[in-house]
Image (tube, rainbow, N blue to C red; front, side):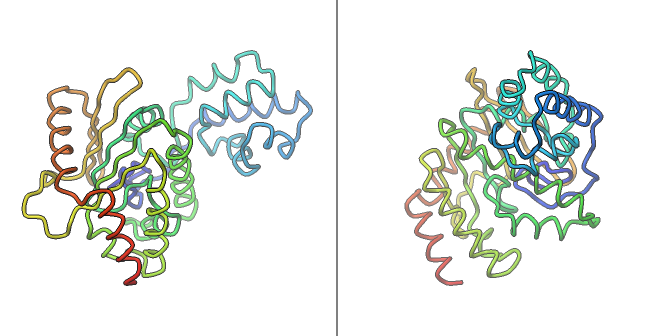
Length: 285
């Protein structure tokens, strides 16, 4: 698994379970709609004022999308809601499209100042293209319905905004070379994926390293891992399996994961060599 989208893991595997719908989300949506109507605004007028698309606003009002913090803050100001939207947002408990075991990590991820990811199964969800992600969802077993696939993609796309909206967060990714050689989804999907990853690597806060396919000494043989640092400079870890995730707060275990990640950074290709390898792989497709 790989990204916690309902049955998918942090990297973004397909998803196995019904995306959960929450009464708190529906209630929050009704509150937003009520304040919007009180302000005499249509959805079309309200959307640009809070900086979100019309479909996103509609989804939030219908209780189908978890509102991001900046949406809540902008809506508070635009609708002069007297703190009611902020208060209601604190009681939102479920996020459709995210598995229950992943939500605690997702909340911390959204505030992290450092985020490290090693993946050997599939591209991490934060780096996936829509075509690649939908390929994973379509191949999920048991099969997903169209609405489940849509909910999972929406949740993943929402998380991907972190890379550009948090320029002061340091993102580090170590990816196995075979993830690109597998050609998940076909040649065109893989071309688009590599182009996308190369584009993200141009961001100053994103570092991407590729672990060579042939690597005699490898500190990541225990499997995928994630590490993050909170604004309070506390470190946590996360590891995910087929249908579960393990949130790690034990400082000794986190220290072990940090040691392994640091060793892998020295074992993987350098940043420049990694991007050069990806460009050559793209040219060979």
